[in-house]
Image 1 (cartoon, rainbow, N blue to C red):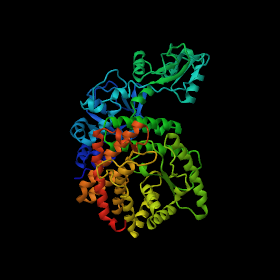
Image 2: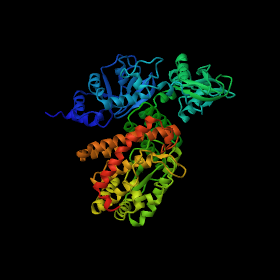
Image 3: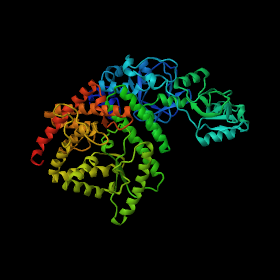
Image 4: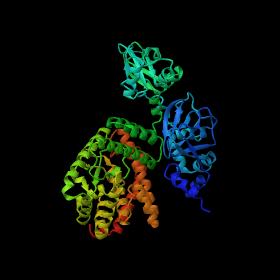
Length: 634
């Protein structure tokens, strides 16, 4: 008899890592043994210092708050895992887990964790990666152990990444004078949405009041709101200089049993207050992982805040690269962060305008559309809006061009530079109605030339970031419909795909630029990465397959469609991974796009690794040359 409950649980879990890495049978085994738990608001799943349960948990619906005492340190939403650290540590819970709202939670046996998830390489790699930047427990002064008894894999360089880095503190502390009463001070805190206020005299800190003081000293009736703020302040304050490290901040808070530190000019109470460092700030540093960053993105109110978060994502990228986390995983994470930032920017921009006159979709194109934009490079995007009456189209276009300009400006503030070629939605050429996009694609396909081939290579790699999915689906259908009527287009696309020669000369030397700004440098993008990107795009289009936009996913699908060429496609995947990682490493090292490489600076091992990645380029180009009979039209 079919287990419909298990099937429903399986359908939910397979959409979230690490469960998406499991086989159907593995996932069904887990789903069949899941316990479904219901919690009303404020119910505890587990409590601090409680002996561990033989389970870890996944949020199905609702939200579970993770608390240290009464301080919310994280919020787990749909698909989030919690309670896993304690199971792995085999120790008491260090935090409280309490329902923020009515919630349904899946409880999964720790036995299944050990038997299935940890023994699955991809799932295990996800767990390692998810702990990689946050292996210490920030609420304890000693390390409680490692994840899978392999510390070198988990944190080869974690000390330099967190504990000894400078702590990032708020440089705009909220303050009041000694003659302020409790009610006035509380209003100031509420208006500024902060959990603390510093009492100062001549800009020097003499005391501090936190939300905890208001709860314990005022809400309990011990003090009236009309009393002076000094009656409930904690004094003296604990001060540190601006160059305080994360480790010093943690020790200072633990030693003094406080949650806020005052930052002064010289680290004493005798100089001016310049900042405030809270326990939450430390948690955010330790919680520099994708889920924390994306939650920060969703709460961001300005593009400037999003810029700060994206800079932290760059640190996350650096750490992942150093830890040799798989490049596909890294690309998915960074792409998810970039997409979340773009969505938030669109929401912020929409809030500045009247409601859209019709539905629309925002498209990431090029490398961002393929989810291969790891470094902060220029932005490429487009916009499609629903068809309207001819008399209304220019009015509607004006609205969306104005909206797109606002979005492009905010993306630039975050760090995504304007596209030099103006491949952006604020350009009237790339802000079109659905019918206009269809006509555009048809024109490119039926009248191909060098310029339209270049545009196809960019715009056929699109991914919907925001808006009406149906518009994008119809755009895709129009591309395949036009190609089916004018198949010679694929031959032209094939010529374009092999225009860049394999990266090595006859004597197996790197083909470098022979003139210009980058003379004697190797263009890893044009000569190595793009030939693989172009080949994957061409071949997937030739099979009339849509919704596979990344280079790796395209080659994987091609291996399934053409099993006789599976080895070649898999070698292309491996080569692409090597090249993408290498470019990312170069970009992080030189603080640029990583595109141009000084060959003479490469080690012998690096040269050999790159040369090994070049062979599939020649082979895939030869397959394209034969399949599309390019010798006849070149």
